[in-house]
Length: 124
Image 1 (cartoon, rainbow, N blue to C red):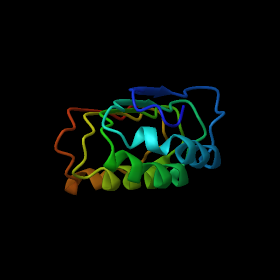
Image 2: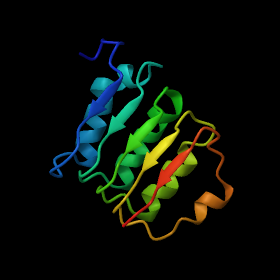
Image 3: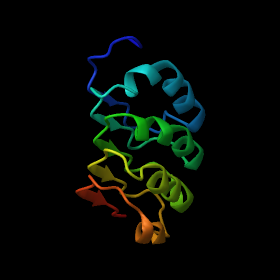
Image 4: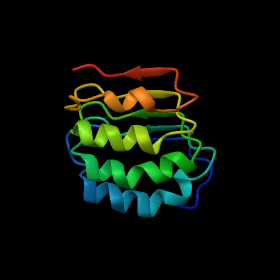
């Protein structure tokens, strides 16, 4: 599976099973798939991914063709949000959904440059 360059979407949402450590292992296994331009959508909502998971994920997101990221319900907090926004600058992301993620500070949006971002959802 890790060699399949035709995968366009990975959905690992729900039930809090995926932690930062598990995410690191997933990106180690699926890294070559996620780096490809064919990867369009990643869904990790409803898991236990925090700011460390975001730190692991952002280099892959920046270098890939990922256009949609759904993380709603994952406790990334304000620190994870800042890491994500800063890590995605200049990237391909067009859709970012971060509802109920414990984000209290969005001031990093003032200076960010994510040119393709057309939809950002920050609901609680």
